[in-house]
Image: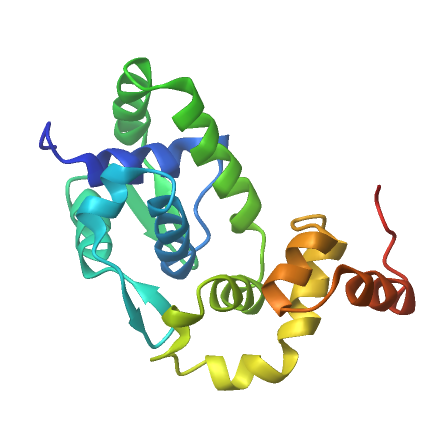
Length: 187
């Protein structure tokens, strides 16, 4: 692994986070995209563009495939795993990383990894509408966007306030809909 390749480092650390696999290439792409807003090194190297399934970075795809080729990652049906060698590398990388950055990686993986593909895309498309421009899925999801975002509230992934922002609705509207749907309101 190249010492100066920050993108490879973040992919490895993300794959090792929470001792669970990344649930597919779509999730890896979206995790790295969302992290690029928080971590400048990812933003500088990843080059995200709007694509058929929202934000896509050819560089992230190539780097993850390279990490598979050299035995740091492996992939199975719907998952990307860190190998034993990859864990050793991740442990060394973590020794030199800011703990808050490692915490951010863990939080994003926990937040996104158990979402369905439609929930994930609904979240990304509503939070970053410019990334839905080229999407083949957006038109299919658009009529059900509210449904998927309420699913995220129910899973306690987003707040009513965040759903209101994403849907361009008032918080009162969201709370009323939550009551109608029997979703418990946490205060």
